[in-house]
Amino acid sequence: MLTVILILAALFALLLVGVPVAFALGGLGMALLIIGDFAPRMASTALLSSLDSFILIAVPLFLLMSNVLLRGGVGRDLFAAVQAWVGHWPGGLAVATVLSCGLFSAISGSSVATAGTIGSVAIPEMTKRGYPRSFVFGLLAAGGTLGILIPPSIILIVYGVITETSILGLFLAGIGPGLLLMALFIVYSMLYARFSPKYQTMPRAGWEERRSTGLRALPTMGLAALVIAGIYAGWFTPTEASAIGFIGALFLTFVVLRSIDLKGLQAAVMDSMRASAAILLIVAGAKVFGKAIALWRIPQDVSGFITANVDTVGLFIVAVGCALLLMGLFMEALSMMLIMMPVLAGAVAALGIDPIWFGIFFVLMVECALITPPVGLNLYVIQAIGRATLGEVARGAAPFVGIMLLTVFIIYWFEDIVLWLPRVL
Figure 1 (cartoon, rainbow, N blue to C red):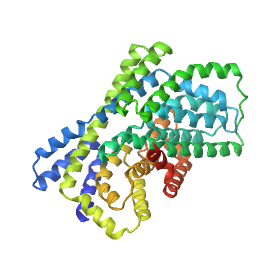
Figure 2 (tube, rainbow, N blue to C red):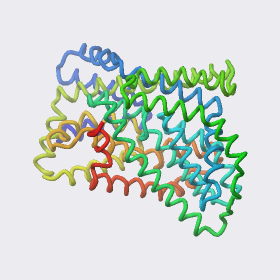
Figure 3 (cartoon, one colour):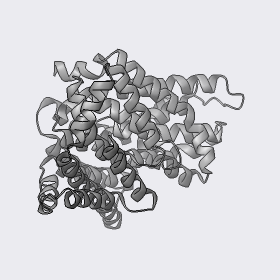
Figure 4 (cartoon, rainbow, N blue to C red):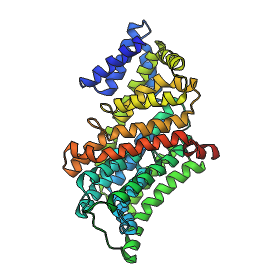
């Protein structure tokens, strides 16, 4: 275990001094190959094998779809439509925000895009209605995390590639916990509004407003339904679904809504290219790191240590959860997954834990990392949009971290919330 501690310490030291994640992983992996007297050419083989994946094509295509819809103002249309139907409920704007985050998550697969898109529309509306700023910021930061849980989730695609787990099974498994998390967010928001002295109710929207906003949002919801239903019905693979979604996003924003021009498309393509390059570089670096630690027998040693000292699944889950909470304080979501999964995969198999269930558990814990300082990406997105301090956003997000941990507890005791759909379908 001393070797494991030294390797992880070296990795964290590289990250803390500012080395990009992809180069920290790849560089340390190459160093381990050389120190261990293994052939360095294994690194190039690992690089090529990591990117030679048909499934990974879905990542840039889903990012393209997300950014085209983002530039086309689709988030604004979704929020207006949902607000017209539920805005008059107790905490109606907060409910509309959560539902809008869930809907946009189903067509973007990105937490940052979800938080940024819905946040830019919801922050002015909610603060105008008397919601405390910290609550608004926390709700939007947490609502954005639905983007990596509700399918099609980019991080679930990466998890499936790493662990060779069914992408369709992971997508199906994410539905139950995603809906549960949305329901808990909504209940908390309604209770918060009910007991908040500054909260102002909204008048009920007229049928004409509901009809007009609903009609404008309908094509977007239709596109989301097509992508998701097509994957689950077996009409096309997740990768084919991402291509269809991108083409549908172009048709929707250029022809139906006419809300984007060539300049906006160019910006969407550039944003997607930068994000895709960063993700794929991290995946490649993680593959080299994973190959090196496998040759050093680190996963086997960790698995043996855990099975010898942790005799129940519950203790293992608690230990992993605590480790991820600590890592989430200074690492972003994808890096945590790509560093930890090669190390934990052997122990997960040895303890007989379903890899699909573990993937959803892992993503829920990673969601906490997205809204915990100092490296929570969603906190910075909302901070920039709301022109707030990081402390103000983090204070508002704290109760939602508790709700996420409650969700983890629930899916541990009731596994069917995660596994029922994959087993049935």
